[in-house]
Image (cartoon, rainbow, N blue to C red; front, side, top):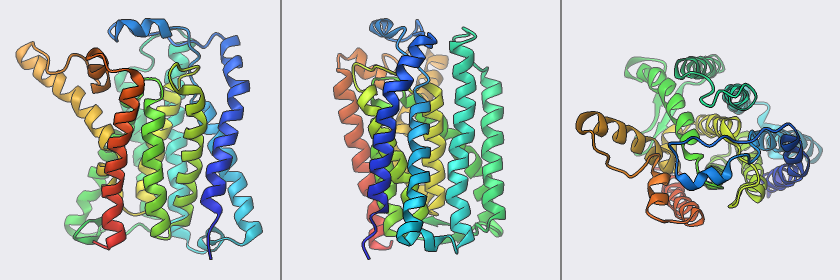
Length: 340
């Protein structure tokens, strides 16, 4: 039987987020929740100063609306997701993925609130943010453990037991995997429409992976988030009328990591999230090389700013980075489809 749920979830997520823009953006303007552009960024970004920020609440609102209506839809139609509720482990894992998104998004919201309302441009200190993110990540992993997670998938190897022997190393690696990818998604949010577009493509890849692997809850969650990202792009594409800021980017980071765990294949995020990795490693390489040589590898990091300094338009950066994500997503889907 054909499952209409992911299409329904995408549509609701898109419409809800897009419609929210008509109400949230004017309200953010009224509250004077405008973006303060950091001086070390590209000089022409100063023209974006005052653009409403904390728009991530629009994505969150669209995501929640889509999840709620999708659950109602699946129970009315007796869809495949309603049957998955008999599997407590799978159900717990996609609920936990949503919880991880909420936790990371809450940290981002506090960070944005301090920057925008308290007028402290750097927000939370690095130590405060790191502690909070690791705490949320550890809590999430504890939920996975006690909800019955036993294996993780590795291409060409298969499912590896994570409860004994060498498999136990999975847990500390997973902790920093979650922390690292969440922050990498955050770093990607620096050009109009970039984080939302790249994440939309990445979510579509996981939507296909989840659907093909019969993880219906994760499939619905990825579809709902993809729709919400699409609705947000309508307001966030260049020239952006609103920025998602940490509220949105950290929530999306937590969500896409959570979905990768919910389908039992977090390692595939290395391919699906290749742009996130490139963004993060560009910063790490720049800092390490500068400390050693007092010279720079890139004109500016994260690397999307390097391409800006090379006179790439914001639209070109978004397009190229999205295509690279698409290629990574297709490469991630391949081993799942072929059963490697």
